[in-house]
Length: 271
Image 1 (tube, one colour):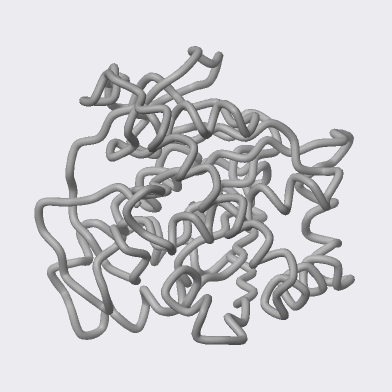
Image 2 (tube, rainbow, N blue to C red):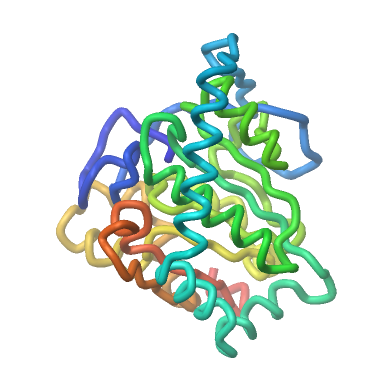
């Protein structure tokens, strides 16, 4: 997930899939511009630092990702994950966000290096499988500043759009949107909530990422992180959170402490 110059660790580093509370850094992004609202910060144009695409590297990485997708698809972890999404309680929240729309766009922030680490490949595999198995998942957009040209090419091949600029997490949910952000830095979640701090925008959001309840526990022992978590902690009072189970050690590094979050403030005064 998007990296940082300063880290207050809760577990491992985010680059290999571990859970961290991280303070700021800069990012970058790739592919066709989208008509979306981005707040506060100027979009930062991005292209991979490596311009060359190595065909042999691309083929090897594609094979790794295909094996990862097959592994996740046949796992008890994915069966449990899929079953949880279909429970009446979560289905009710999803239908409420969708409203009259038939599909929900997916935005993946901070996927990490697909070539170097297995957890990012597992996370991408889960997103790809969700799109295959759930008709309400629409187009997928991806960004991480560490993506290489080869990784970007593979993502495009898999029908994902790689953004050409860094939104710093400040995408406004003008339409139903699921933000897929396991193990991103705290600042990114905070930016996302700040950009959507209105009743109608929060109602368009679904967030899959680090547990807000865990952030609350961390904040009690690490007061320096509070500046990057203000909106996270404030949102807890109107957040319905559903933790997932990692089931086995194979999926712990990629998904531990991950939850579904649905936001349902009733009055502007709650914000």
